[in-house]
Image (cartoon, rainbow over all chains, first blue to last red; front, side, top):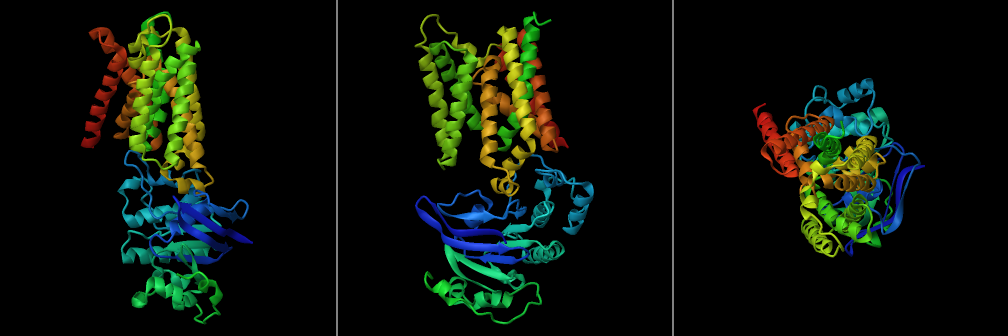
Amino acid sequence: MNLIEANDLSVAYGGNPVLDGVDVHVEAGEIVTLVGPNGSGKSTLVKALLGVVRPDRGRVVRKPGLRIGYVPQRLHIDPSLPLTVARFLSLPVRHGARKVEKVVGQTGIAGLEQRQMSDLSGGQFQRVLLARALLTDPELLLLDEPTQGLDQPGEAAFYRLLEEVRQALGCGVFLVSHDLHVVMSASDRVICLNHHVCCEGTPNVVRDAPEYRALFGHGTQGALALYQHDHDHHHHDHDHDHGDKDAG
Amino acid sequence: MLDDFLIRAGLAGVGLALAVGPLGSFVVWRRMAYFGDATAHAAILGVALAMILSVPVTLGTLAVALAMGLAVSWLGTRGHAMDATLGVVSHSALALGLVAITFVPGVRVDLSAFLFGDILAVTKTDLAVIWGGAGLVVALIVWRWSRLLTATLSRELAAASGINADREGLVLTLALAVVVAVALKVVGALLIAAMLIIPAAAARSLARSPEAMALGAVGVGALAALGGLWASWWFDTPAGPSIVVAAAAVFVVTTLAGRRR
């Protein structure tokens, strides 16, 4: 059974189609990366998966009782709201001290508990967001460009951490990125989105797909994969029908 | 004891402080100041309607404030530019109310009592309404506290935890309408928003957690109510505005103290 799936999802804002007939799904334990240029509807898809945006057509089906750990792109906390890290981690439900201690250690934020959220650095802030997501014992981690605003070492460190905790938890991951080079090799499946699903497959298949190259070009492959991962490098058969009918 | 009008006035102020502390904190965190203003200004329209229909004033203000709150939050979800919309709606409601009140048949209405409150004329019945309403608001906010707080941080974060941010917004709209209805007698329609914002803002600089800020705001509100009444008694100043001035004075002190730390 899929953890979550979107079937024929269409969303329009003020007459402009943002998502058009999108099908995505995440199976238990699977890492799915969604890539797409800015404005391609990635965040809207995440919001629809969370149930914040109501689709005009199609629907989102979640496994009953699915526990989602959500890590947003960024979180603006109004300066008028005093909030310590410890309090933030306990929203909306308080967790046992032992569990908090474990996750805090895992995500490397020990010692920050009494700090104000507003005093954290960008990297610390994202780790705290991840820690809060992990405290829910997620079956699905939903990450919307979680390293936006981090420098390259910070980004690499965040993804290394993500990979560690995912291996420990075995949860499914749905990761949104505008730049797949960093995250691609650890993914079971990559979905390339530009209002519709342009192409989909294993990282290697997507990297070589013409639809993907049309969107992202060829130039940056030297910067590929800040962390390497022992993945098989076989080319899987790619379903060409998928992208051809609505490419462009 | 309740036969002394000053004691009744003090109790009315403290009762209001209980409700505006936590609710005002949310108004500040969610940047709903103008929203509060619009709802409060609509209260004057509620007074006019209540008098025309001969129903209790509290009921009229509650209904109109609630309708205004719902209308404004509905406009917000429709993606209208909120700042201008709230400005139009807020001042139109106030002006419409002031015009409508002149159509009330019979006795001439003392407008200033509704605009600036008439806390020294609070009756035992008023007191029961104020404490009843404040108790309702406090109970509602305490019950939904974690959900309200999560929804305040982010709609998406809330949704991932199974919390509907729209529903929590409705809870606050309802609480706001109740506070407007009970605060009308205490500080009046023009200064209700001030009592929501100033105590919470004053508590901000000394608080390290949302809970501490809400409790601090209750303390500041109560202090301001009693201090304002005292000043009103000694200097013969209008009570409602004096309470707001006292709250503003506390704000200045805590802000300076917060800077120094």
